[in-house]
Amino acid sequence: MAEKEVKLFGMWASPFALRVEWALKLKGIEYEYVNEDIPFNKSEELLRLNPVTKKIPVLVHNGKPLAESLVILEYIDDTWTEGYSIMPEDPYDRAQARFWAKFADDKCVSATYAVFTSLGEAQQKLLQEARDTFQTLEQALGGKQFFGGDQIGYLDLAIGWFAFWMPIFEEIKSLSVVDNENAPLLKEWFARILDVDMIKTSLPPRDKIYV
Image (cartoon, rainbow, N blue to C red; front, side, top):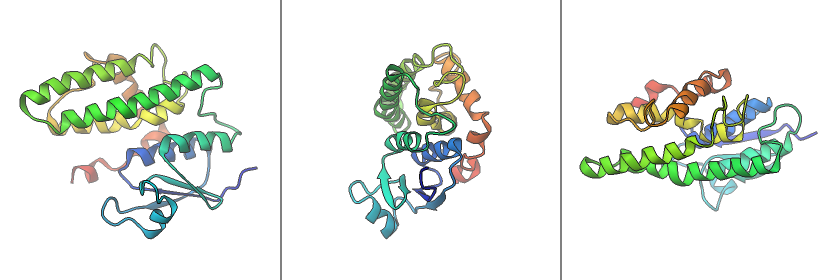
């Protein structure tokens, strides 16, 4: 049986720390949460545990630190094997889930950042590129309830934060990236995953984000 002594170093508004929190809660793992003051006042303990990238999240299990949220998700699933399975059972499906998670991190995140930090004509061009990127991501969903099938899985945890953060970005910037016209299946999935109790009870306060 795996040791239950678990500590998570994160930051209250970090979507990448959220991934790990969701995974721990799905598995029913008790953990201590350490909220870091990012980016201005990182603790000495965080810098000691992750001297390479000096970033959150960091999961400490049985005294051993592990960085990078997607890596941590797989570690959690491999270590606590009983109960809920995060990764797909089939090797091909696992590889596909990893592919789309990397696509989201490499393409969707950068496209989102680009469109919401630009102005004028440049923003309109980047807006269409962002929409195209999320339309591509939508292909991984197909006709399923969740990317993991009938229940949320690895890819849902990896990209679930978009469902919360994207509408906030869109409201602030008066733009629409993911909507019923551009990506209707993904838009429906946004609502569906945010209705999962474990997800919605773990989200940061919206009013605190707008401050």
